[in-house]
Length: 355
Ligand SMILES: [Zn+2]
Image 1 (cartoon, helix red, strand yellow):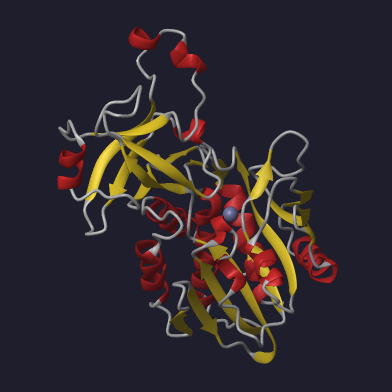
Image 2: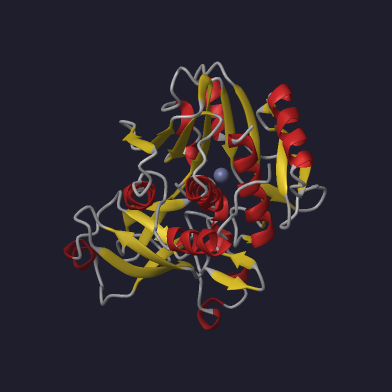
């Protein structure tokens, strides 16, 4: 039986909309609610939230003797306001903000990026992240030499402020979340954006659900879809996978670069990362399915990588875990993938749900 038809246009549109919702780890409510609203259109799904804020959708299968789960994460890298700078500090302008990173944010990758400071009262204040020796005409060669780290980078607000009190008056406080612009662009099938990790895979799961629902088919086994909200700090799916589940397929980006098999036009099965090997039996079943349905895929190993599947394993989850996902170039940087990889990943999810 061929796989149900996939609505690629829907997949891309949903992805772009999701990418444009700020969701650094700890500040994911809007993104989770967006996915929840989308999935609430399907009466086949029973939706719930974990206490930690993750979204879980249950779809009763034709059989229920081997329930499965898939997980993808909606949280992204970002930052928090660490300090409202005063004139006492050297080399800074009063009223600028220093930040503390959330997840593995690489500061050189967001230098000069536009950002929002989200106050605790729900306001958004615009700014950008700069090195504190940004002006070439003031700092000369020092501007190039300054290390791009938390000590030397600061947010410049696009509001007239000249001291700490002005900033506080805006409602900004230490601990406010900072989100960076994703800068989404679609060109020739490429999707270029920050945070394709892991919104690309959330979109793949949602598109797979739509495709299955549109074709009037139910999953072979009862399936849980876990939309995680704390993956980038290592404990996303450590809670929220029901105890009856026997297999967990983590859907997360594949690492593209020198020495890697993965690319932007395939889905990848990751058999080992920093957390060690994944479940051989489940991985082999996924390979067999990809061969059977002629899904373009690679098999790869990621040298600096951990997944939510491993978070569940570490939390004591007694399940088989495997990891698949689309190839994403320049991960945790200005990322890029291609629609072909997104389609391959979504079809792989469908093949698994119908297996
Ligand atoms: Zn990820």
